[in-house]
Length: 188
Ligand code: GLN
Image (cartoon, rainbow, N blue to C red):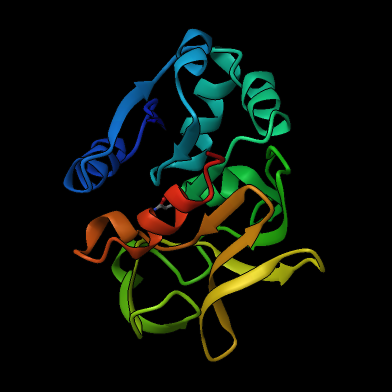
């Protein structure tokens, strides 16, 4: 089992490190050819406008959508969640539309307004530390979408079918539950 980490911009190396800790191999995905080898894809945090620009330049959009249509899991964190959302606001931005959520970019303010909080989660093991860096906010959750972690009304982790989206950065803490959960989504 090989995990692909979209490595165009952002903190992709921290996702590699997190999977390493679980003894799961990953490769950096940069071109359409890398998709042949992988069974799941992570789209990391970073700057969604920049990642989107490279996705278009590298003609990866159709490839990611095909990969999804074949039933392979995709997990977007932060900027990655923005890129896979159905609708993006603040400002309106093109996205791949793989999960029925609306996200507002930079919804909590600027870099200095980044924060750490705690969320309740349906994943076993109790509360989860949530690290948000210039994070988007999930404003709307579609009918087919399951909420996996939230704090009050704030939703941080959602799933729809083979798509997982987190507005926070699980790769920045020692908690590997989200990685483990994502691995459990890969068909055997
Ligand atoms: N603010 C970034 C964006 O809108 C996302 C930040 C992140 O990925 N940590 O693209």
